[in-house]
Amino acid sequence: KQQQEQEQQAQMDQSSSKQTAINTAVYMTWTERFLLAQFVSLLAGTICYPIDSVRRRMMMQAGKPWDQRQYRNSLQCFRFVWTHEGVRGFYLGFGPNIFRSVGGALALVVYDGFKAMFSTSN
Image 1 (cartoon, rainbow, N blue to C red):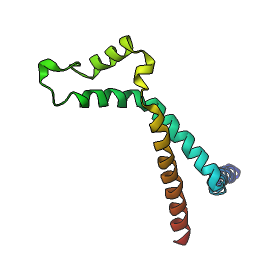
Image 2 (cartoon, one colour; image 1 turned 180 degrees about the vertical axis):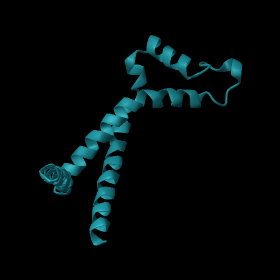
Image 3 (cartoon, helix red, strand yellow; image 1 turned 30 degrees about the vertical axis):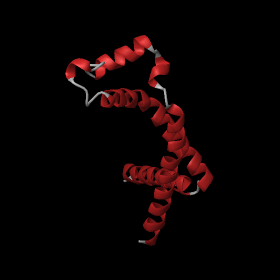
């Protein structure tokens, strides 16, 4: 019986810590939420931008005949950019992408706000 009470107490402590984590997220201000969303959006954009750069380069030559294409596949494109342009070549045009991330961060914050608003009304 004592072991059963200890297990119940452990379950209650566990659900209490989950509830605290949920409440902490709810009590973030809009500014804190936006800054966190902006950080996440910039981090994801920075990590994925080289892949996006290779995709864009491949798309730019899509209409050309096969023998006039500069790159045969994505891997060759990646190697070409790495050897001829370096890391900088993958991040050309990254500036406008930073401004675009503001919209993504706002979308995350607004979605979170609507989700909280509708989940409390049920």
